[in-house]
Length: 498
Ligand SMILES: [Zn+2]
Image (tube, rainbow, N blue to C red):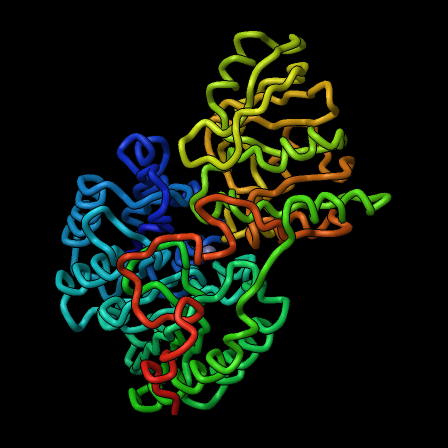
């Protein structure tokens, strides 16, 4: 059995003015053939799972192209068109194949295509025809559209946040696809979109109400004849018509049962919509709570500067507030290539007086004046084989400088944006995060798998930025209406419960 695998894993924050452009993708963002095996073979990623299916008897998995950059704004027109045509060219060559496995995020937006995932899946279907089985695995933050699901035979979705089951969901998808090619099953998928947005801080799948919803999906998936069932959280920072939550189900042979069970799951989600909304601590409240913790490490989750949601990772809001209070033993990363260059020029051991952070027009806060010693300069590459968000194993911060400031802050200044999803990000520089009283993690859910291991407390801080908690702070032009919680009334009439 010959299976091609390819994909584009992009989460687009349409409120970011920084586009996913050619330079970004050229810097390690596009992998082909053996490059995919080197980066993802043995990794806990979606692509790692698809590659592992190539070890099954009589199954050959051929990796063609995989594109990934850190979450940021929409993909520029030319780059998306080229990536898509490269994928289709690769599929057209050396065919035919029995199946295609797509590693997609589900919240990709290009400048000219609001539903980039739907476009990829539809074009792949047009190319291979109706008889080739197509499966896809999506991030839990997918904004799934009917057009996208219609182009596929089956889709699986990460069911953990932080995402530590990418590999498992990919294997499940591959298993369904392989059995479908062998004629053992006939997957029928159904999507029920909900007019509902879940707050970013209510998405942890180990907390309620998400834990119960995930358990309900798992129970439904275990019923006789069912192939899978998924709660899909959606990604709120994308101003596109398909933005929002959904329920997905797949049955062996009966589309009506698939629709009925997806609707049943959607009903369960809808019933707890009020519990999927949230408010967080202000900066002052969070720092007051931190000051009351006598020992251990408090991790402050900087919601507004969530790198995993497309924010720049250079907000100085918490740094400035800590500096103003004289709060020391403070550790954080900042994306600041300019200051890295300044530190490199000054050299290891030099004392520098400089400003850090907030380099962009949309960066919250202002550049903060610091004086410090350059502890070290590093190439910024590190590896983590323990569970991380999305299962990534290899990371690249670019040239990185560690600055110890006179107000007892340690600043890890990076040239590239990297999620704060691995303790190795600090440990590879000789920094032990557990030695600090305060660690800022620029994310909401993505830091939890790693930082949960060292934190005595994790506090969600309602900071400003293009990933802020309160979605009423953003101006949407393309979202559906009504959509809860934007519109509190009239929503029931657009959603038809069973
Ligand atoms: Zn996600």
